[in-house]
Length: 283
Image (cartoon, rainbow, N blue to C red; front, side, top):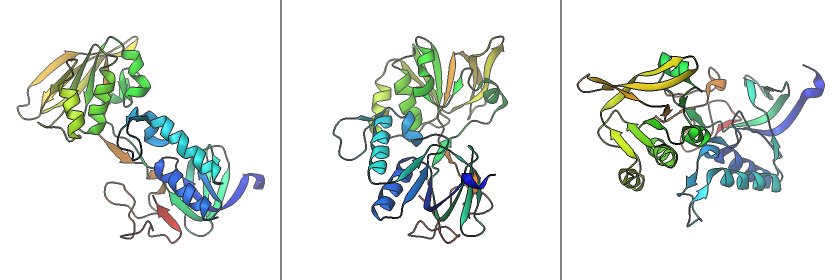
C-alpha cells in the first residue's frame, strides 16, 4: 500500500445510517473534524424504507431515502467529510487505529465510532441461497417492481414483514404472509392496515420448509410450508419470496477485537457508548 493512500483523521465514523450521520453532525459542530466512511449500503436501512411515519416533526409520512439525504446534507453543511467507500479490515490493537478500505485507501484515527447498523437476516436454507436474486429477496422496495401482477410470499411477523406485505400489495396480485406464531409483533396500526387489505392472506403457525423452483431459467415457482405445531406440509405456487425476519448486527468486521454480546451486538459500558477499547465507541 502506497503511503499516499494513507490518511489520518482525528475522529473516524464507520457507517452512514441515522446514527452515523448524527455522530458526524455533533462531532463537526464540536470541531472534531470527523470523517465518515459511508459503508457498503450508504444511507443504511432507511434507504430501502418507503413511508416513515414515526420520525418526530412530520405530520405526514416521509420517504426514507429523502430523510437520509437531508441527514447527509446537514452533515456536509456543518463540516463533516463524507467518503464513499467501505471498510474491509480494522486493526484496533493500538492507537492510532488503522482501517483499510475496499478502494485500497488506508485510514488511521485517534478515535473510532462504529455505526455499522444491521443487515437483513435470512432463513439459512439451501433453497433460499440457491434462489437469492432469482425470486428470493429481502427488499420489497428494491425488487417488488418485478412482481407486478404476480403472487408472492412474505416471511416474518414484525414491522418489517408487515410493511413489506403492505408495499407489495400495491404491486402483486396476492400477498401471503407466513408467520411461525399466531400473532404479529408489529405495531397495531400496521396490523390493522394489513388485515383490512383484501389482497393479503396470513398463514399462522407456519414456516418455509423449502423454496421450490426450476433450473432453466433459474427461478422460484412455489414454496412448501410446514405447520410448526402439527408438522403438516402444503405447497403453494408463488413467483417470489420476500424474507423479513428481522436484522442482525453488521459487526463481523470487529469480531475478536471489540467485546460483543452473544447475538453479535457490540457491548458498551452501561450508560455510555464506550466499548472495551478506549477510544472506540458504538452508535
